[in-house]
Image (cartoon, rainbow, N blue to C red; front, side, top):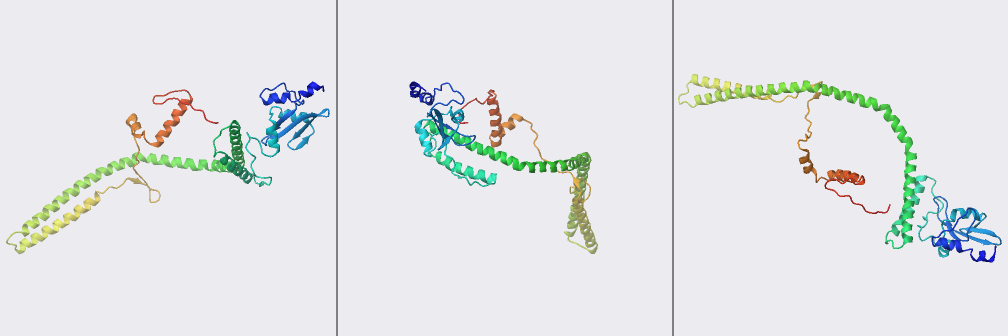
Length: 340
């Protein structure tokens, strides 16, 4: 290597730190400071330099035999010497959330291990969010932290699915076994009740006619009873009240009482008797089911417009229309930028 080349050993790295990447060749390092990481791992500082006629590499605080292999994975991640030194000293990276303080003795149970990992991330992330973001490095840190937490959530989702799947399969098998025997008899039972509707409705019509006739008869008998009692009271008011008159008076009173009892019985007979079929424990009778018949949809919609559930449905439909670019009457399509 000539003297000019030696003087320029740092040039590629310096340009890359400024965002001006030169040609890259696999297995052919460029002297400088970088960082690299294994999948889902933490960034590690990397130093590459030419010494004694050969390339040398250090990853973290350990020497690596194959500098060309290290270069292949770190070449797109140059860092300043200050950032490299800070990482070597254990202070981490300005744009990288600190590693969760969980040590190496994690529980063997995946659920418990993930709980420990999340608890450590949560504590540090919540502390970080107590101050506003003011630098690009802090913004990068927030984005990376969000990704790390989303990864925990995905792990939890996957582990949950794996653990629950046998139960879902077993439950589905039980559901499939019993479904027809549950649903078909229930559907046939309901059909039989619907089959009874016409008969019971006709019986109810007859019952209404019977009640009307019984009520009219009760009224007639009550009028006769009232007339008989009035006659008895009228006879008792006469100045001369001989034994014959007394006997007639008593007879009229007895007849009035008999008619009043007959009227009371007729009133009892006039009480409603619900049409029914079957026997105790298996009786089917007419029941009143209340439901809404919409006669004016627009008026009903106006009456319901202030209900929260209606607003939620309308907002859902409006958002769907906005995403499709359809602007309906009473709405405007708006957009805003959010971190995602």
